[in-house]
Image (cartoon, rainbow, N blue to C red; front, side, top):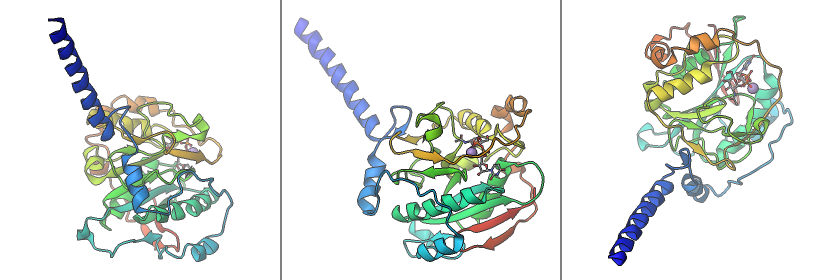
Length: 304
Ligand code: UD2
Ligand code: MN
């Protein structure tokens, strides 16, 4: 009798352990971390990956970078495979919201192009620049950038603050999961995630999930709130947030002064979980932007 009970208990433990092992393998435990399987897969395919590196924080001119980054074509694009949409290759759009942070942009480009090249991704860098004097509206810039970039048949969209410089090239920008919060560990927060719900900084989305949450809110002007609003959209749609582990999803944040804070943000955030249905990509109305091809990026010049 005792023996039978022990066998039963052992079987239950073994069963639980195997379920956990399977979940762990596919990265579904520990707060939806993508454990290392995707990184090591890419590490094999891309022998030039180096893992951790010290970002180069010098401000280099666009001309000099354009000479050095010989693989980048006009408009800030690179393709490792013949450009064939039907081939199933992930085509990544990097979207950078921007206004008057030239030095940050130069530092980011100087690190990002070699980083993406080492990952052997098909990518295009878009700088979505607000060129009017209205308050900054990052969510709306992202939505416009998304709609414009989508015309070039991208399959993966990386929303990227201009002042976050990656420090480890195993942090894949290829939408291996979606939505994926890439900037989990930032020096400013002692390389620890301050809050499980956080999606601000750098995130990667496939079209399907991004459209399911109706993109970003268009209603947050000045600083703050749009990233919290996105967290609520994700929750309302019961989507998990995936992240690589702390040692991989590392960033250095460049210093800047605090922008003018949106004092209405907490009030607007109260109905995010319902408002997302009609505030976002579906309600986006915008003046067709001027689009220019620079040597290292495609410039989307927006008047809100
Ligand atoms: C946090 C979030 C950020 C955003 C912001 C406001 C993290 C790591 N970052 O960043 O994602 O949600 O809070 O809610 O969680 N920008 C310009 N010019 C401007 C103002 C902003 O280019 O005058 C762009 C630029 O790409 C910048 C981004 O908007 O990186 C975010 O603005 P921020 O850097 O002033 O905000 P921050 O660092 O508090
Ligand atoms: Mn910042």
